[in-house]
Image (cartoon, rainbow, N blue to C red; front, top):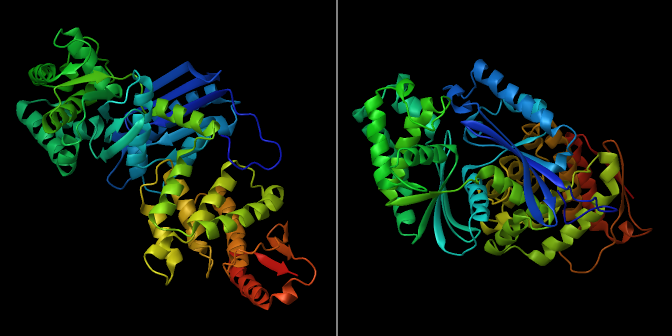
Length: 506
């Protein structure tokens, strides 16, 4: 994806992009062509993997489910073979959010797919779902409620036009609701009542906010809601969507079948039968609790939202940039000082791109954002403000950022001064760990050079790396005229030793 900083000639943006959604129930892939500003979907693949049903109490995946998931990703990978990394975006949702970080599944999945996989937070998933749904609807700025029932979570969003205003991710989906409330696939009125009550309890903390959000239209996305719509329309219970009455009749029909295996409904696939009752219970809980009377259906969802997000970044419309700007304003960051550090950091970065292999278009972006946010923790307190800032960035809801990106941003801010936080980088995946350590060193040097906070332009030294050995070269006589900087560089050289970096200067 294109970046606002690019050393040398900027690479041409890709004309074909692909997204992969590793959901708790199904895996989806879309390949689209960008032509004259329009988006044309040229390929779609979907497989019902039911990743969520393989999640154990110890946050591991059952071997049979791992095998099923990797086989699917290998098939997806065959279609994506030859596509450059910046033209493919793959994300994992609820089940991967719950998976033990020490599990090897994500690494295996990336190998099978042939591309990196980002695990996104629930509210970020909600934002991307809304982006996909809103772009697929007829133009209009009316306020709408969007609901997406996945395998392990349900996203609920209220927005206007293409802008989400209120979003939540609820820990209930068709897979976990079916597993917990309909064990063995047994269906009864009492089990359905208990499932709907459990759904209502999950919605309860956010119920009033969504009921009072003054939305005029309810829209459902995802395979679960589309499957329900297909069934009620085939039965003649509703036309072009899902009515509350049709959902009541579907509930009664499911109870009458007595078991998931016995369900016989036109338009319902065999693969979806084991998790269908759970999905219906979740949707009925939403209808009842939020006062929905009718829901229209969207064919777009998370994967389309990812496509539109990629196109936005290619066109230099990166929501992460807006998120960082909003944080700077909210926490009263000294933006003039931060911008000076950012400019110096990017100049130093430009000198080490090739020797340190920092060639990913997102590397300068992450460095620039860390420079702008390095003092965000001052709003809490000056003492150890780098720790306050790291905590905020690691745990805040940062639109556009993946969990891994937030972890990297937090590590950079934590490491911009004082002791080098080796442990924070060691817990990151190895490829991310290596580039993040080097970006942190660059940020530290840029902050050091502006320690006096003077608006006066300072000479930017030459930075020459030789593996983990760094040489900073200043103009003749400059260091002798600035003894404080010289002392700070001496201290910095000592602090970088535990990081395996040897700093020389002169």
